[in-house]
Length: 532
Image: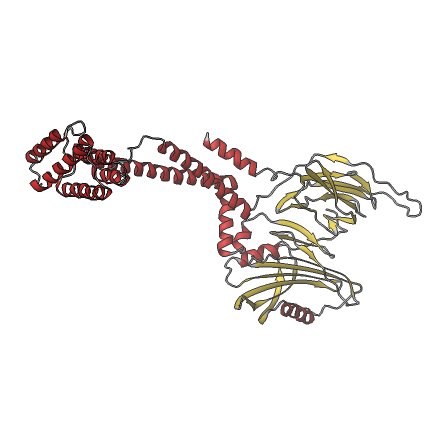
């Protein structure tokens, strides 16, 4: 039952993890040059934020216009909608690839859709323009990547484990507290002095001496185990002497005589009604306390006291057992809850989380994740990366540059970074490799890189893409410490453009080479005029 409640609770945590991306196109068959409209739609909680990709091209379809994102509030949810007008000027079958949409930190993909471009003869002076038709709804089958574990999710999972274990601990504590306990025990000696403290010496003599004698009788009835409270003074003194004699207590006759004198005086006050002043009350009270002290030092522990002491020890042992049971139940419940939380989030996600916290997000961390294939810039360069590269604002004053675009990915806590740049020239420009390398060195220095050491060589990947490589080491100052770094930059150039991919990483990252190989082997130029 507890496990069922656990999974119900954890299931509630995952609400919001399952948003889907509705994918629609205005039509699936178009003529050359005709536009279609792609619409991505999703509904999320009103506090969540959705990021749609902003691309120059989608697959091999050109983005004619990317409309601003629309938001419509519906109850406690918000509908986000993004529209793109796409076109293609060559006949063939083209695919709108699955686009990566970010909902907060969750990555969700839209559906991949095939579009057919029909080859027709076009007279540009007479060709009629076509309006965009109504959306054709297509069932969306989204592919979700594994959810990366966040700090808040981990804290919530640990809190739940503590909460569940704490509830059980409190229940057991209340149950054990309600079990019968031995009443608080006061020894005859302590009880006598507690009662002495309550005797008022300024009260009338009859009441005063009656209280004093009752206290003494109660003490001896408990310690010497004979009936004293209902006995007369003569009977009491006789029983006291007999008990002392039989049990061979070392009590002097003088002490017993003092008790007898005190009791006879009390009888005179009670029955003969003699008057005793307050000063005598105080001295007689002190004498009674001294007599009890004398007997207390001589008398052994009574059987009752022994039984009470044994019962108290047994109770303490029982309470310790209960305490151990509660602690063990707390630990076991907490561990079971933690295992359930780890199972829910996934063992790999949890280990990746702690590895990233301890070692930082290095190559090993990202090589275990699902990667994304995307296209960037113009000329279009396709590359596989662990995260989507974000467009940077970059401009150039070079009059020969027609188009420049730059994209990058780097988080402050990561030990890796990727930068991608594409440049298209207005006219044919002779490639100057030395100037390209010098520009790269200048950019590195602008990023606070020091002591740069470089090596140049040729590049060719598994897709037969060739170019040049500039790699090496550099240093950066971080928190008043010098950190050793490495960089690896690939240049693909011709007379009409330049494409550059730079990867930087911690020099101590042992799996960085595998990371670099995966990125660079995925590089592929996309010819937009070529059919898919």
